[in-house]
Length: 604
Image (cartoon, rainbow, N blue to C red; front, side, top):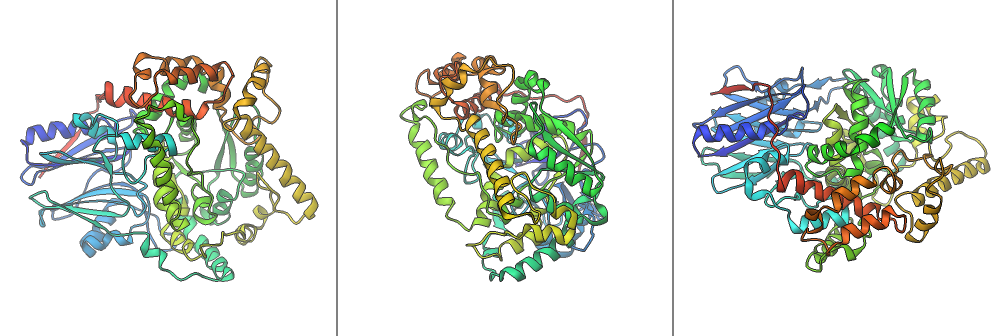
């Protein structure tokens, strides 16, 4: 996927260039990618880039003394503004100096070499959604959009960070800008780090949560009025280019469609499962019809289960272990979505930012899995996350949940297409902070109706939005909620005692009638049946059972108990398999893909 990489070092230029070449090639995940290098050996600056076909590479000013590597997108603030390209970003730097970052809007990262100042500026977006990994060695500072670039060239990093592994098991994500790997870290959100000829790094932030938390709250009616105006102004920016909207049956995507204006796309799709059309699919068809969009259903099918071993390893590889193997369907479906349109507009993060929805919570795992020396790392992680959740809810969503827990899903999709969400736009985010902390935005029907009255009359996947009788609406909502709960408890939430009962029914030809009503992934069943051999081959291998964080052969015991239907260990198996693949791909036998594509090399 597109990205940047680089080294600041005083080692020999030939050695530095070769190291940079290896770092850059690690990011070539698709045959359509191209890459290049730019070196300034007299300053010890070496940078590389990967891009999709049709995307631009480095931007150089007219005097040829400023070189910008920019990955991601910036959306102009003017009404109806198009996506701003790297040339205009560089012009903003020439106009405002380092303060140009304050006006950028989107998910991006970049490196800017200024030959006149003899400096390099490394930066990312306000919320850190475009990651930049970095590590220090005795002779260099290296950075990259992907951790695997650093693992390929700095052997000392090829080991698990014990506390980070504990966080992954307990929370599903590494916390506090760490990574799974020793001495590899993530650039904090809103960073602007500069270094000169001597390579001493000045670490600054151009944006923090405090910049928005200090705003005064708005009364509900005024907040609603401003949100309506802001959505109408902001949302059309995100539909520029060859885009399709990823529809669900919920509120967030419907709201952005309501305000898409004349730029509303004529293509849409919904992710579907293999058993039946879930509520999301049925409702999305109505929404698409109301907007005049062609609608398709992209399905998980038997082909996914057959390809799962490759998809699981590819998912872990692409995302540097930030997306677990239970996210493999994201890659499978994103490949299908790419055939419809190269840009996916989604309502992701709307619930977290405006409605306080959150899935970032510690998971109750079987502590007997873990070695007694490792268990304290798992327990500390639970307390760390509990402390973080005391923060301002919008700040927690934007600076913790979205860039940490949800990063892997975004990164997996971005390997196939460009993903956009209006809900992280600077204007919408700034306004979200003005809703009182004790409130959640509830006036969705009015908001959607202000943009498109017909959309406001269509049910959601969980409730009706029409003016039908309260008794009917309550009954419909209760029924959908019961189905949702039933599917949860039959899937990842199944209690251990229910496993043997379900196992007696495992030979039936079709799943229970409610399976597939709300969810498209059913890994608990799949691990017991179609995927059980693969799970066993991964976790019962001698290398997996000898991991220092495990309590003896506990991984094999967990797989066996789940496979035989005696227990539900789907969450434990998911995280154990993910970490084992991290070991295989990045630590024990780090693969370094070699591309046949010749690089573009620039040199000052």
